[in-house]
Length: 329
Image (cartoon, rainbow, N blue to C red; front, side, top):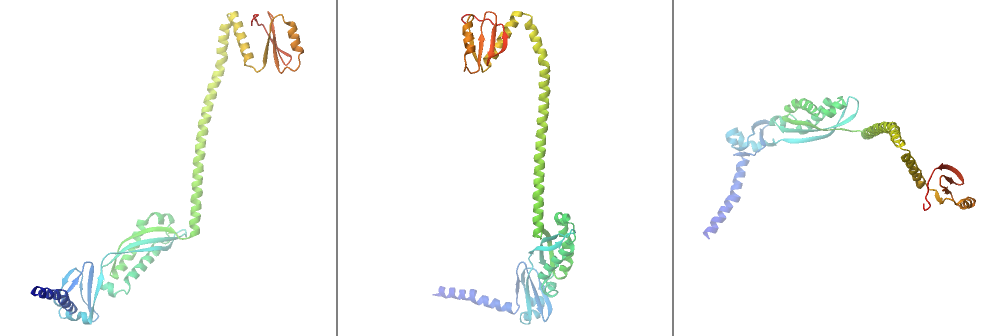
């Protein structure tokens, strides 16, 4: 029972009585806790009593004197967030030197540098800073050449920051890093025209590359044809001399020459598409009957005699050569 009584008393004391007592002390300004990243500004009767800008535990009665006890009743305590904040302004309208309507996206950081000026010199320092950045972008970036606006974003960011920083410092709002993140065309028709020009230019470049490749292939092909023609012409020029020299060696022996021509003529007859009829020697009657026969398609007849032979195609005499056939041939 004693343990339960002590436990209940401790619970009531630490979780109920102690927070109530601490709240009463804070109400009368006995102590104040400044959290990390915050600033406390005490104002009494329209005047700034003091500023607590470092995190920790403070005793206003000791720091501000007797006024610290009544500041919560007759004054005000402004708690400000001094952490770094970021804002992105999209598509701020600017015009180039050529008159093209452009949009600029501006990203910047800001933080409270002077809490008193932040509270009393501007009713809306955050909105005023955004408007100042937007106006500075229009003033500094308008009438720039289009190529320079698309390429020199770092210098453009520095121009905007240098333009805005003095005024923002007066309002107690420090402007941090400023960067131009995006530059784009705002006119839809202009965007479509640029896209059409880019597509046409790509098609022209592609056609030029293909044509250049075709020209290179044609040059290589014509060069190869020219070299081949030169080689064939040289071969044709040398061929008669080679053939003539070979025939000269063959003509030295009449028997070899006669045999060669017989072989060549027989080869030509065999390669042809005509029908060949071999007539043995002494068959004059058979030869006469063959000539008188009608309806034989494209015959070629050879009248083999001991010393002479006649070759006829479609009833006409075409050549005469000296051929020897044996009886069994």
